[in-house]
Length: 201
Image (cartoon, rainbow, N blue to C red; front, top):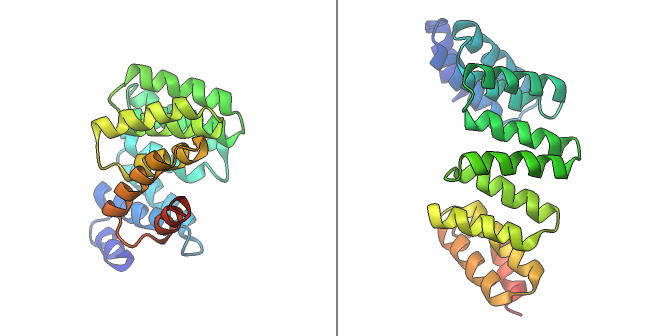
């Protein structure tokens, strides 16, 4: 995939889509290949040179800096918002910066704002639920995960998180039901199989 994407950038060096695709491939293999993050950054930087007013590109570049340089990440998310004030992915990422800085209350406050303004956004609700769970606000987390499932019944991450939340509350049957749905969507998932086995003992 990388070779094909590289060829595309060589044949069409002025193609934003080619550089964006190459950047996304490198981004997706960051944990598997040394140097992939740096190549992803370079690819998105090339795409931005060609299309500097695209908020998606600035947001993707910001995500790549979240681990190594939070100030740059914040700068790029702000740039994305400047270009498109209602670009939800940038708003979500800005909230998650607070979590990176170990300010869970700040992250929750920002994410609550996003959910209030965009109540039908699945990713924002899921992230808010995850933040609530990490803050040990389990009932609030369950509410968010269930809201996501109402909007998108096969949202595996929310079903899995719901299983974890019900497990923490000691509600085994509800936890089992959630994990069984995850397993239907992800057959053979060993982590889920293990959790179900523990719950059914």
